[in-house]
Image 1 (cartoon, rainbow, N blue to C red):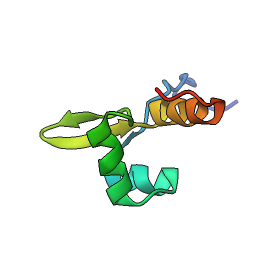
Image 2 (cartoon, rainbow, N blue to C red):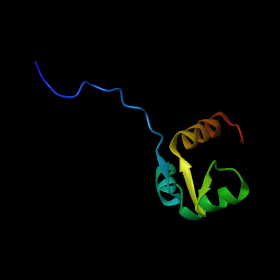
Image 3 (tube, rainbow, N blue to C red):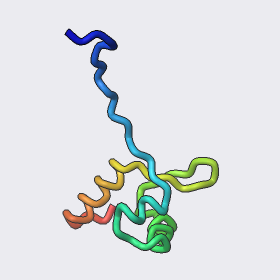
Image 4 (spheres, helix red, strand yellow):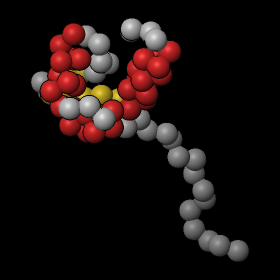
Length: 71
């Protein structure tokens, strides 16, 4: 029998991405990311004056684009 810490359920954490990471994840150029932000099309938020993106919201945005939704 193995002694040690009991197994704990890991809480799923949402990955937060920089614009550069989001561009790589989405397969877009960094300039395109900033254009989409300016148009209000890409879901993001500012932290300390810098843009950040939640991976799960980007996944939802992609799914909406595939379905043909514009928002």
